[in-house]
Length: 152
Image 1 (cartoon, rainbow, N blue to C red):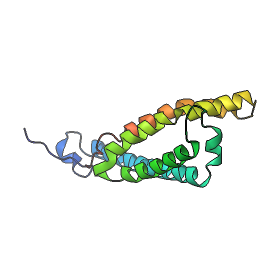
Image 2: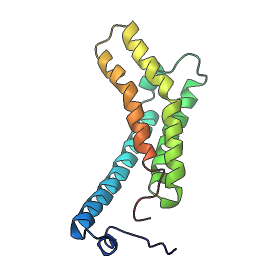
Image 3: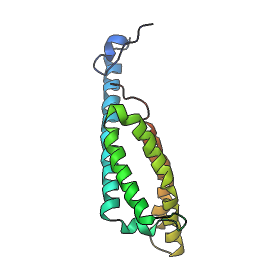
Image 4: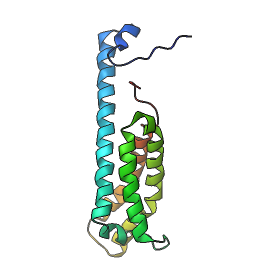
């Protein structure tokens, strides 16, 4: 069986629906590429924020996690490195899996933040509650890059 590498530009040659599918595929491909760059920027910004402003992260670290300062620093560096590695096709899949692992690893801090807001009766509790399922969305988003992009 012969496999053909299909890109958005060549897709219309290999389908019976012609320009409509080609246009839709090209749009999806561009959207996926935009999503990749958006995710990269998000994690670079988040990682830099960990390094520049560690204070808020210190407050949400659960007590049972050791070495708070080191963990904040390591998670910030990991976010930045994994973001850069997302851009490289060779390392994109492993980087996406590492981001998923990181999102799972920092989930206890998100729970601790919600508990802090609840115990201190702080305004904005609803945001900390909303952040918990948002983690699932971020994991799904990272998972979408565990497979090659259409042009790869």
